[in-house]
Image (cartoon, rainbow, N blue to C red; front, side, top):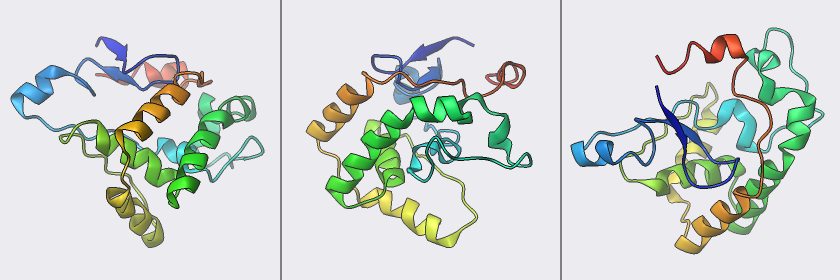
Length: 161
């Protein structure tokens, strides 16, 4: 499956040919539900480079959650945190609001087992990102190179099938 970057820079969302920004989805009226829109907790601001994961936690096997990658990726977490602070919301709400602002047919459905996180995630619908906010987020994010792949190589080969 062909992959491409949405936007510019190394920090942008990598999507398959049927993903975000694909005119075919829009033309045919097909919706898109992004997988793991909160990146297994990565953009929520709840962890930093000192985070550790028990061996039973799936994230302990993911390259993006190594201490080195978490430290390198702190700039992205800080960006979401500063925007969230300005808007008086959470970083997770900013991440979800950004997805919701991309196209009306993109509907992120974050998973959670906690009622307070469900309430927080629903609150993202009320976060208003102006065109200037979106431009600022895209400009700042384009200067950040996210370190660590989503999955170890063996698991990544199983995606996009």
